[in-house]
Length: 141
Image (cartoon, rainbow, N blue to C red; front, side, top):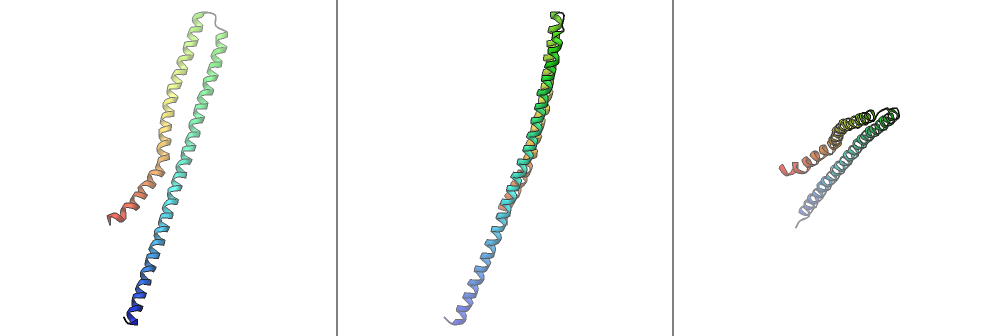
């Protein structure tokens, strides 16, 4: 084996090691960025969910407060009734009004919950799509 062949083989090996190192480093950088972007999506989804939960909580508290105020007004009106019929009618109106309000607000709350869930899933869904594309793109090539 001559010196020239040995140097050529050494040079080729060194070149292959350098290429492999660069490829590995590039892959590591890409994976790190992918993981960071995925984590950012989770954080964004959590923030959307937290804001939505706050909106829903405030709406329920508003409904509870309104119901208590209506109950107090009805209780005051009950003190002034003169007949049993007036008391029954007042109580029936109170119950029907509360039921109608509860049904209407429950519908709004359900719509809000679905919207918040969908909005919170958008960043996660986008990242899943990117991740799947990155994983399967090299396989398709």
